Length: 212
Image (cartoon, rainbow, N blue to C red; front, side):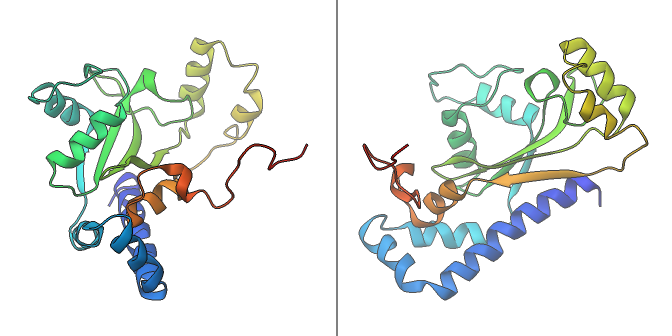
């Protein structure tokens, strides 16, 4: 199993284990939302938990979007970022099962993501986890651990001096590694069926609530 594949399983396992814990420890709270806010969400959540997540490349995702009969506000093109409408369509296309999209275009992602050194489409080892109704829930990548490639990319971007400190982290070698992040509010939206992200912010902000 590669580091990249392992990262997918960690992300999927995190989502399912945390959700199982929330459902077992807070059934009344979750049930309240499923009854009064999002009827039918319980069945959708059960489907996400019992099925393995779908895995597809960015290129495969673009092919699905280009052949879709749906009319998008933003035309899908290889090299452009996925919009929320694209993400939601892909999840719907896969039967409302969460979808991993990996290997994004090289020029689309930050300098620290690992270069796949592939062609003709140049990509990096990045991945997003898309979930029903929300779109992107998690984003992650393998990090570039090869100093020469990292320096070349920063030189092309004209950022070598600004990120000299980052290059020094690789100066004496590194090891393949990666990381990802999950949006907490988006996660709550996903499991509870809340439509507006403002309604799940733990510390809501409103006029005159934050005195500086």
